[in-house]
Image 1 (tube, rainbow, N blue to C red):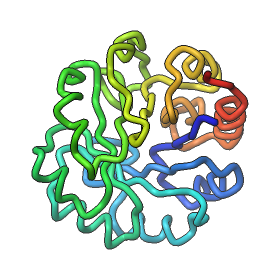
Image 2: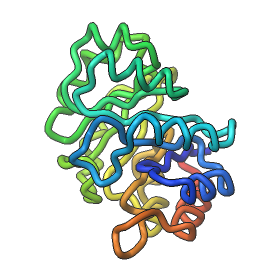
Image 3: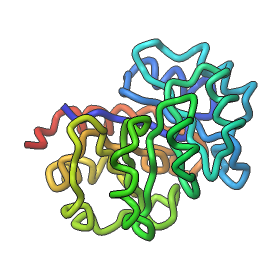
Image 4: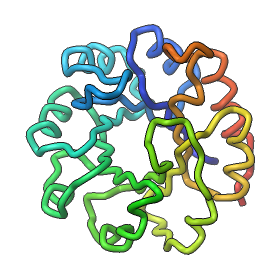
Length: 206
């Protein structure tokens, strides 16, 4: 069954939605003030304390320092998802297991990270992460899949297209943020989260 990650959680109300519908992962943006979904470490601690134990927490960062990842670990996160620049030393020495994120412009770097044990999964996003846009999923066809590392599809997924995405790409997990937001773009929609998880879990990807 395909795993689901709901990303960009920012409030106690959204934690209630997560606890009710229980995706496999919940993502929280940190140290990236350009994002409307960015939260500080104090808010992260409060939200994680309210998160049900069955949902794994992911700190989502862009160009992070080891100090920032340490703060995320202190907050209680299970994983760190890294976008942007990250040298091999940081990836290998991260105090949290790493989900390495790619977009269509840097996917050529995939092979060099495949042998790093601390990386537990790869996430593939559109050229502008968080934009809500899809990309050409056939670009992923040539990539070698390691059964020990999660293959996560992101970028423009919604309740309307997640089933097709799973059938075509056969990812281990799907990731959504803007696709389950309220129509006004502010906060998450309870009904969209419910529908996205239900549809993703109902599709047979093989």
